[in-house]
Image (cartoon, rainbow, N blue to C red; front, side, top):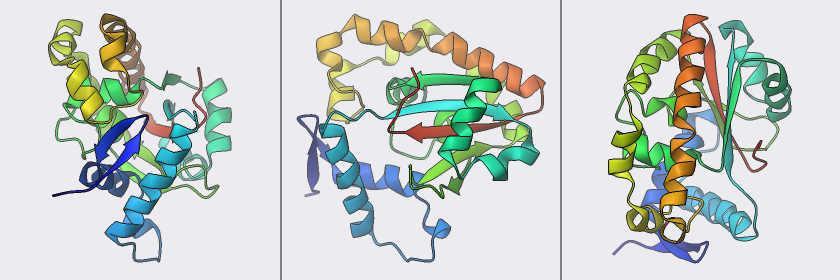
Length: 217
């Protein structure tokens, strides 16, 4: 029987958490040979901060590919870029939106559209703000944009399962209490996300997905 941890008063399977952290904190980005126990410790530390009312959010920036290596390792630079370049904040809604697009929040995406938020090449953060920034190349952006553009609000509605989302640890928890209001919030993010990727693809830009404990609202 697998173990679990308590987050936001919900029990979450540690196997699920480990898969997600392996994605965002790539083993190859550090000389240390991390074990599964290390991943679970990292998960517990993050979840502890979430329980202390910290928020987990995501914002996207689209930049010329030659700027990626300069920007990706530093959240401060990414935040500055957010103010001036093509950008989009999904705030705390990104995990719910990923669940509706991909069908899962923690695993490596298996669909092209699912790579919009949780796909791409991990670049290790140098400022200790989060394990990695995820980078989609211009070619990947051109592939993701039309797949994402085919998704409709009714299709997302059919996948909205509040109880299953709470049980899967999709933050922010409480989908059963929010009911239709929770879905309305997620659905409102779809068109801006599609427009963002369409514009980035047309301009030949890379897209950087920035997970942060200080969401941009």
